[in-house]
Every structure is written in structure tokens, then in C-alpha cells.
Image 1 (tube, helix red, strand yellow):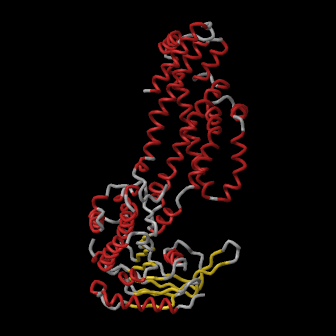
Image 2 (image 1 turned 60 degrees about the horizontal axis):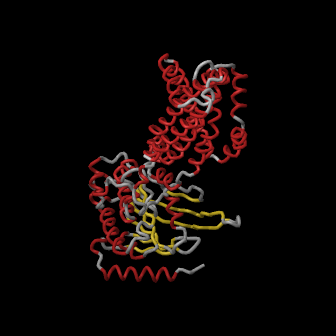
Image 3 (image 1 turned 90 degrees about the vertical axis):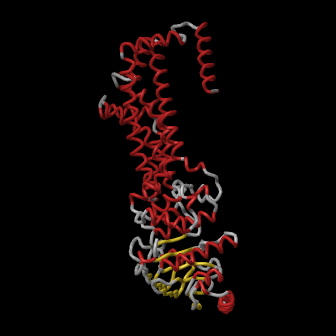
Length: 248
Length: 251
């Protein structure tokens, strides 16, 4: 796996959703997203941060093409150039880790798959079935699968939720490295401001329902060199911005 | 081991009852075995067993493949399901005998009518089970396949069939026992060979030796098909469930 093989393969992401409604139980439409606009340059890493239940997953599903019932426009990368890490790993339980990668990314070579498994410390688990993996390992496998597809756009939906803190931190570090290395456009959805700062160049802060982008922050320095103080300052800034968002 | 002992006990019981019963009504195992040997020597036993087995296989394959396809569509398309569900209920409750007699009247005493009637009896059962399986397909995996732009073939092979397999194995098990019982009735009513025909002959002659000489090897054959083909298939398709349940996403 080297960055050169996908140089120039990254896609620019443009999202302009005028509104997205869900039918509520009482039959009246419930607005989830409104005037939602977001742009991410090719190769950039963005993070969408917002309170739980504000429509972040809905947004990712729209971008992934899984939900087409909305008004607006989303620039999708060409067919087969999308990678996604769902909240639940969604591995095929009847195939081992290695086969899960092969099946989702038939275009990846054996060497690439082996390199990815090594990178994500899944090497000794490559013959294991998903049912034999811990949640942390299954998440790693899901990340490896998304990367094996060499996506032009990588989408991550709270990929570290319900992992214990040290494990989440370790995985975040690995993911940040991989994102940097592969130069693919990445959008990560999270409720954790610190996580967003560690992973993204651009951070989009969302309002409560109906969600729209209320503020955005740029992480100017390269992530690897981001000092703790700088990260703390950014976090304080983001929290202040989130607090300033009027609750509806 | 216990199963073998249980079978031996049954054999012993049979022998004990046969000792006091009139051998015309219940011959002992030894006498039946002798009759079996006679039929085997003439080759008739194997011919009839083979013909019946072919009919079982043909009806079973037709019912399973057609039933799975119909059931899958009904499980995935709600309109089609609602449209044809009443037909399914009618077919499920139609007595096997009615289907068989109608098939013979409409298509004549032919092989097509015989195999078709058996398949039609098994069909609704296969449809119901396949429909259940199709309804239970994991939507999350479906979305995963869509995001990763998996081909239709890859989805069928790696996502749909592994999820349907346990249902198909269940349908096969119940289907096989249903089919081989109905095949005998079909043969008895309108065929001039096969185990069912021989049983009819034994009935006319009031010959319990002959009846058991055909019935026992046939039951043994079907039980071995189930033990050595169907059950290993069932184990194979649920092999992946063997791992520890820790961190598993799908029950």
C-alpha cells in the first residue's frame, strides 16, 4: 500500500442539502437537515461534530448514496470509489477477516491486503471469523476493509464509539496516519470534539435538529506536530462555538 | 451409541411380538430379511428403489429451486407477497391426495404428472421457508454491499446465500421427508414401478413380507441420505457460528 498508487484519486466533496425530512410516528414530517452546506477539498480530512441524534448518520447515509429521499445535491465519487466504516463493523460473519477484505475490495492485490492487515495489527487475526474478534478488532477490520477499497472518499460514522479510551486513542492515531499517508478525502462523523481535532483539517460544528453547519474551524498545523496546548486551545474554541449555537 | 442401542431394542421388540403373532400379519425380522434377499437377488429391489429415488430427487430439486426463487421474491417484494400469499395458504392446505388425483386426471398417468404432483405438494413449504429467510436478510450488510459497489454475483454468493443457507437446510430436511412419503402415494395410485407400486402389489396379495421387504430398505436409504448428505450440509453452512459470541454483530 503506498500513497502514490492513489495520488490524484481523491474526490472533492460538495454537499448542498436544502432539506431532508423523516415521517414521524404521528405522520407529520420531521425535519432532520436544513440548508446544509459543506465542502471538502480533494484529499482533505473533515469532521462533522454535533450532539447525538442531530442527524449526523443521516448525513453520511445521504453522502454514501444509501438515502436518496432528500432535496438538494451531493457530489458522489464515481461508482466503486467509496469506502465506509459504519458504526457497527458490518463484517460478513461467515467469512474470515482476510476474505472480508477481499470480497469488499476485489481490486486490491494480495500484497496490499497483507500490508493493510499488518498496518492495522490484524495480521495474526486474518484467518479469524468476525465472531471471534473483540469489538476493537472488528472495528480495525472494518477500517482495513474500507481502506482496501482504495476509496476516493472515505466516510467514517463514529468509528470509535463504545471502545475504551486508550484503545480508541490508539486506533485514532493509526487512522490519522493512514489518512495522511493515502491522501484520500475523508469525512468523519463524531460527537467527540477532541477526536475531530486529532483526525481532521476542517471541523464542521452542527446545530441541533434540524441540523446545519453553524461554524467551522480549521486545524492549521499538520496533525502530527499538533502540540497538546494547540489541541487544547482548539478544543476550547470548538466547545465555545458549540455552546454559542442556539438550542431550538 | 444410544441411538444404535435404541434401534436394536426396537428390533428385539419386533422379534418378540412376531413370536406370538400370526406370521402372515407380522413376520419376524429374519423372515422379512429373507424376503428382502429374494427381491435383491432378482434385482427387482434395486430397480424399484432406484426408480423411486430418481422420482424423489427430481421432485425435490424442482420444488426446492422453484420454491426458493418464489419465496425469495415474496420475501423481498411486499406487493407480490400480499398478492400471492392467499394462493400459498390455499396450496398449503390442499390435501396431497387432491393434487395427485388432479394431476393424473389432467396430465394422464404419466411421469410428468407423478413428479409434478409431488413437487407441487412440497412447493408451498419451500416457498414459506425461503420467504422467511429473505425477510430476515440483514439490511446493514445489504448497505455495506451497496457502498462497496459489490457486483450482483458477489452479493448473491457472499451475502444472500450464506444468510439463506440455514433456512434452505431446514427446508431440505423437512422437504425430503415430505417428498419421499408422497412419492410412494403417487406410485401407488398411478405408476407401474417403484417402491409404492410394490407396496400396492403387496397390499393386493396381502403379503406383509413383501411390503416390509420394500419399505424397510427404502426408509433406511432415506435416513442415510438425511444423515450423510443433508445434515453435513446443515453443519457446514452454520460452521461460522461456532466461534465465541464475543463482539458478534449478527445473531
